[in-house]
Structure formats: structure tokens, C-alpha cells
Image 1: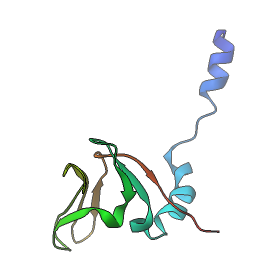
Image 2: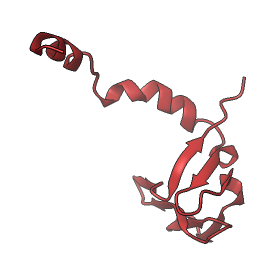
Image 3: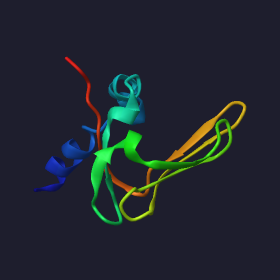
Length: 97
């Protein structure tokens, strides 16, 4: 790839606003039906099968039912929410249809 090809390739990207539509479609569904894979042990199952500790609207910690590793953290404040999925290797979200 010469410099001109590389420049053309780099110009093809979009900013993160391109994710607005696709992510709105995903997060408008019941995420508890989504299949998640634990990053620690690889167990796959619906988010509804996670063991959740804490009470809404406070911090929630969801652990893998197989190995007890933290899979998901959700903290909600008065105006913002923080979602940490670092313990999830992947998330398969059914979109219906």
C-alpha cells in the first residue's frame, strides 16, 4: 500500500456518532435476554441468570453463576449511569424479527 492508498483508507472512518442508530436499536431491547460470555471462565448464558448484588438505584454488581467473577457493574446517579462490562467477553443481543 503506497502513501496515497493509506491516506484514502484513513479518510474512510466516521466519528462515534455513527454508532447512535445501531446502539439505540440494541439497547432498546430487553438486555436480560441477551447472552453474555464470562471473560473469566467462558460460561455463556442470559444476563438474567447472573447473580446480582446491591439494590437499585444504587450500585449493582452482577457475578457469573459459574465462577463468581464480576461480569457487569451498573452505577446510576441522578443524571448519569455507568455500565462496566469488562468482565464480559461478548454479548449477543436478540433483536427480534
